[in-house]
Length: 414
Image (cartoon, rainbow, N blue to C red):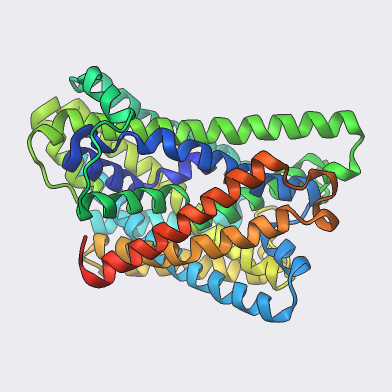
């Protein structure tokens, strides 16, 4: 689910733009980001497994009052960015329905947003989890597009090995955009929160998180292996979809110099080149991914801030028992609906949210890495050499990417 939520309509638009603008020239970012995504999400997942606490609550345990205030401000900024991103994703759902001839896009954006909000308020974790997992299947539509498009696999190989790298500001700015949409801070909180919800569900509905340290050695080792396989499979799936979108749009739109700014632009442009099937698959893909991404965007920051404030949170709890979480969840979702209904520029929303996420990603990674190496908190499950090296390397890369992203946005170099 985390890997699929990473491929939301904003990510789809970014990957489509990369393929349409630079053909296969940015395919190398798919294998390059895979180990970073695996490392970061495995670390976030392991902090939840080892402690039975979410990332927000672990930050409360780890840091004193002043650092917690800074982290809280960053999470509030993340909530704002997620609301803007959710609005853009709701607009993409509406555009997808409009492309399929189902009616006005703004109306479908509102219907989708209200429907998602109601489902989150009244549905338990088990129902929501199963629904989300089925929605992940929609992303396979992009893999299917590869079979519709005429792909030059020799050229794809060159792109994968970075042989088509282009030293230009536009190319650099798009690399930053790709990094920003794959190593997104809301996914850190979602991975941790989702694992905690799963641990609660394991305990016969008693809502108690049984950590690895509370299990016998053999079951604990088995749980950790399964969790890692789960995370790595999800990240591989996410990158596979990323690769499919880039390669498919490179084989079609990239040869015609098509300007792609939204996922809907890509879907429209694909029809005369690759036939109606490609347009249909693209539209279905970002409708499904948008419905999946909106609740993840809303829930991730809400769980993080509720945990930091030491408040109850979780889909397994009724609204009356987790007021802070559900208020934040409702504000984020309904706020996204309102913005999507009146906004006319989804790209502007995505750019603004990307800037905020770019600024927040590195600090949140630093917080996560400091928690994951703390022996008192993590015990025997603290970061080893490999996880530490990959995690801190990813943090350094995101620091640079965030700085470059801010510079290109402020100066207009992109």
